[in-house]
Length: 364
Image 1 (cartoon, helix red, strand yellow):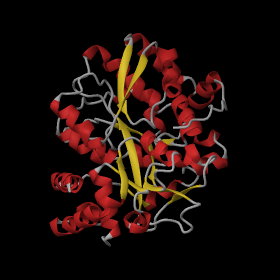
Image 2 (tube, one colour):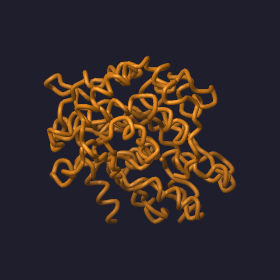
Image 3 (cartoon, helix red, strand yellow):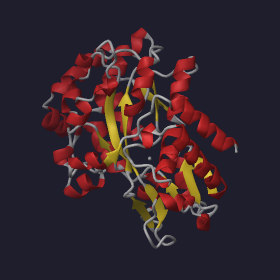
């Protein structure tokens, strides 16, 4: 989620805010600006979600700069919040389907939804999701970005579109990569060994044991377990990796330079959704600014920048009708029913067993 081209300015800022949001959000954001007189917020997120050009409009509008702190894994983010080792983070990025861990772990502040008026533009599946609501009825996170995780590959090397089995094929030893993330990598192994897609995230101990065997057998075939998408993109660019379970970034960054392909395996496509949340450790005097930033992530400026540069869709419909059909198709918002075919990774109740398996695989 690298190699960025210049942003195509489809609207002026005035036209975007006035035409899409009717000036309402601009006015509310100005109110928040008065409340949010802080110099800087630290945003912990993925490197694909945050580039300076994505957040510069927020600084100009509010006077609050966004300092970027990039994540290595969902598990590391949760652990840092739980242990208190990331007290400098003001805004964090829980995955939608694992948000329950953060809520149950009491590491997030309840959100004041009145301070996030752009939430009204959320697509229904995100606006109505119970996954961000605690047992106390409070909302602790808001979805803001979503997409799918394909297999990215070199079309000049793989004549047939890869499947998950390709990632376990000794023919391509040393050219393959998997993500260093228990939930997805064990899920891929489950699909590979034949676990039905609707049972992958509820595997019992015997099924997890079989997935572990497959992953241990796979390990010598891999060039790496990647942690940041920038690193994986560079490995593709230097011909060290030719096929990987991936985000779409290497495809977008390199398709004009290499014969890149993006496969969507029939066994199941991994969908993802990132949320905005405020840690309990965020100082009280930064809470208003943090809410204003969450509102910005659902607004037109961030949505347009990440659609045009990053080829990702926000969870908000705020700019959808202003995009060309080709761009809508590229970011999967031309037909919203596509979400029905996704596998939404869910951290299972026995996720500690998954983490144990993953640590044993990496130590093997």
